Image (cartoon, rainbow, N blue to C red; front, side, top):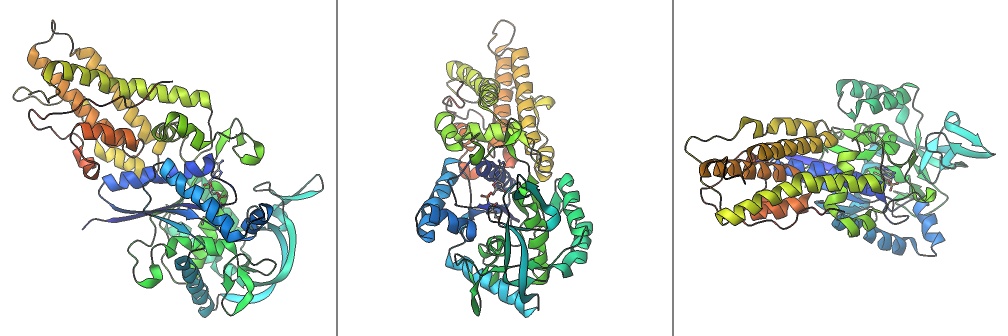
Length: 498
Ligand code: MSP
């Protein structure tokens, strides 16, 4: 029986069309999902849209649209983005779907039965943009405007009747949990941030609002709308059918999120789950921000590289490769069009060209068939891949290193080919040339199996040319020999130069 692996992206606010930050979270999650699937796992990969709350209601009003119609329209652009980015998601959840609403209500009732919810009054700061509560010491006064120190977004005073979740009861269990599960929050640097926040003390959390109506009403008190983060976080269990006995995948192996929403995922979410006596996700990975120069890439700053425009012009594989190679996964990283072109030209030179050179010789001289190797010939040890090393790299969420390792393997293969000159009939015996070509094609196969999570289109296209169908792509193919005389097809140009 194959093992299960469950991975999620954040569910995105459909308040405006998708941007590079969304693309980045989704691509990273897809890379891990695809890698796990070729490692042999049965993968459930979830993404979706977070459609309730004041932020969305206001965005709909601004656009003079009914909130549901507004969400339908923008959520569609996020569904389209999954195709544009070539995501392998198993499902796309929208929090306005019935299956989600019933799960949230069940979770609320469960918390209520366990005496974790009470009615009181909230008075404090709230940011609609972050849909977050901030305490007095998390607020700054900039030019007479109150803003959150953490996010810089505007906060407003809010005072109303509210249901509360007894978060304060979970301070100790949470700290114990972080201690017992040192890999729960990753990367390491983010863990300390969360622990010190929890150590300073947790106040009970307001989990309902009465001043707007776009959301899920509280059972038996529909004047109250549930706090959008309680609603949103529950998506991770509603998509697995946890409460319908259909669940195969909860608890999640990893929630991939941006560092901006760490508190919700590493504090509130495990506290809700503990309080409801449900299993906790195994890892929360908070990646960094995509920057433009020194600043966060964001629509309001107008410093945006649009993922859809880039893909239209250069291709999805190219954007995926660039973001995964050039931004250290876990840290902030600045991107720009010049570096993008340098990186994808290097991909074309290092990997695309190599494939082209080898297949040209094979096509011209051997009718594109796998050459027979001499008896006892074994492939140069240097060209064998240590699969474990790649598996560990992804287990440690070092996606950037994973790509760099493929790149350096390809450089090694280029050097092997250049040193051995399979085109040079004067210095090489016919059999020698065959052996070299065989090794080179095997090396290319290794490269394109490993590249499948990063550049799925090019990989599928190359592997099809060597008679491997998409459904058969697996890490087991690495270093595996070819059938004698196997007929191959010369691949088309796999990566273009700009
Ligand atoms: N709806 C919430 C998440 C709920 S999850 C239960 C939300 N949505 S969001 O649309 O505002 O952003 C979601 C994610 O987009 C961020 O966590 C982050 O992963 C990603 N990014 C948005 N801007 C970003 C950058 N400039 N750089 C990298 N990622 C950032 O928060």
